[in-house]
Image 1: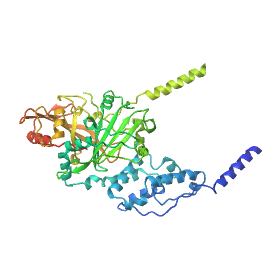
Image 2: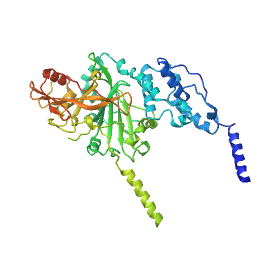
Image 3: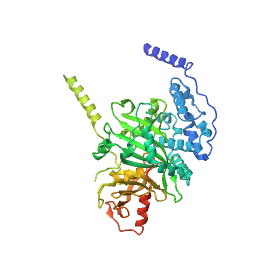
Image 4: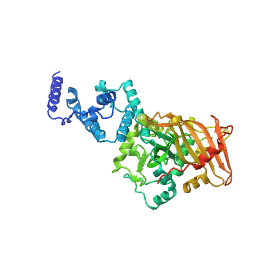
Length: 315
Length: 157
């Protein structure tokens, strides 16, 4: 009995002691309403996102207790680094829309707000009504409308120069991605396994699969995909024509996923790479750029990190 | 000995779990699963270009055989050589369950086939239905043929 009391006393003393040497509390500066958003949308974001994704953080008394505050402050720091709504006014309208769509998808996937955060702060959870409000608002903000009736001359000039531009790229070597993955130039000769109309960011995408990927589809062995499977997802800007139809404008980027469970064991079994723009500039500064790829694809972990539901090719 | 068996069984379970295949998630409704009257599966050919018709929630891909694909990469005047086969596949769109803000193909609405028999002679065929069957010739066959032949290849570096 005496021993138990002694342990409890020591524990209590220890907990009190660490309250004086915890981590530095994150600064909190009032953040303005987000320009261009209706009040109901602003209120949802302010309530559920601002604590970790803006300069305005409202901490409860229990958030400040050590050692819990280690975790809380770390989340706030990382959250602000990933997305800071306080910088909203410095962003372009297209970037703002992209952020809102991305954020809503993270909410729908159940990743945001962090479940550990809403467990302790249940009032920060989004209701179904909140989600419907965000959806309805975002459906009015597609970038497709912004691109309506844009002149087609540049894209038309590019189309005329397809063969020439292909030759040019083959002649000048494309730099590898920061993780060492080399560009794969012949993906356009692969089979199309799906297409996507991304009206959220005004692009149209074609997803190509190499021979190994197509064989896996034919054999219905795509979960997991066999080593050697490669996908190329190419994106073009949507070009809205006078009759309302949409055709491909400028080339935006091509992204690759290369399956090798052993070689890419540290990156979910896939090699990730992206080249942007007509100059095929490798995306990312350091090899760690793949963390963002994996983070985005993590909700699809039960589908081997692949979003695409491919066509079948059986006849 | 008993522990060796336990460890062996544990390793076996881990191994089986690692190798086992989960069900494939394929978009069967948007695929050509039965040939019907189609001479080949257009989805196995080369993709030349794509378009979206938001008013009707339709998305299309123009496919071509080797001759068509090679020609489209070099020339954009629609003067395809004999032996060219093009397919304009049109899908009804559906909201992408994986990503709010995207549409993906739901099911095939129709497939148009244009074959260039000779320089001036083309053959247009329309296929419709869950099992693609030749449909009645439409009044705008010539117009559709000209449209399909006139579509230009997607540009990528």
